[in-house]
Length: 275
Image (cartoon, rainbow, N blue to C red; front, side, top):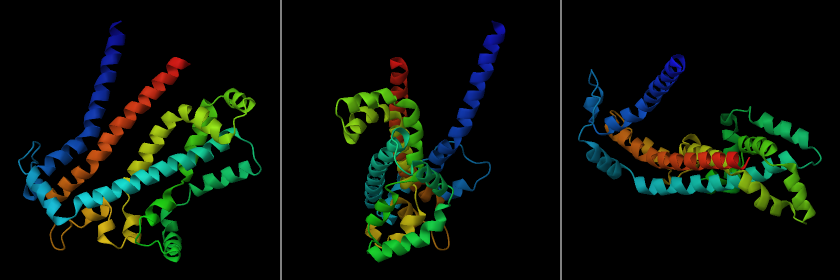
């Protein structure tokens, strides 16, 4: 009994230490956003909050169009996430539960594309966007990202192990087609997979810097990451202002993560109770 309590104590102590280590960068980000740039260079560093937060935030708002870039990023990230969830789930569900000619070869090609670095596609992707006349528009950010290999692979793996084939057979016997089976049978079961893929996609698009930097030409359409990069000075950099802008940029991600993680856990628990 004593050995079991000691083991539990060590386990929880290790988890607490790991939590503090992982959370410290976020704490440090908040602290530095309330300080001046000179405070950041001080040693030993100041580990408690200062009184410059609102001053730093107001300077961010005057230097860049923060809310405009925020709305642009929210629109692009939401559109890409919705499209990815729809098209990737369709393809993943088909790969998992349906037989069709060339299925294995197509899946191998899909896995192969995941091994190709995304940087190699920047030049051909830009050429395609230029030929279509999409350079400088949101279409260049949304359309190329509306399907990705990882999302198809993830949904396929999840659907293969969680959707009973008997349910699909019952649906076919009732005369249901592919889309009716997809919406009425597959989607409710795939909700936990959707929660992860949605969060993963949204965060990736929200933090994307390189591709928007290449294809966007109008400052009014800049995404948040490009707008924040304009805070860097030519000869000196006000790091406290940049950190304050970064803090504002990650708050929506934290809120979204808390919501999605709660939904993910509740879906998993509901599935376990049903089983």
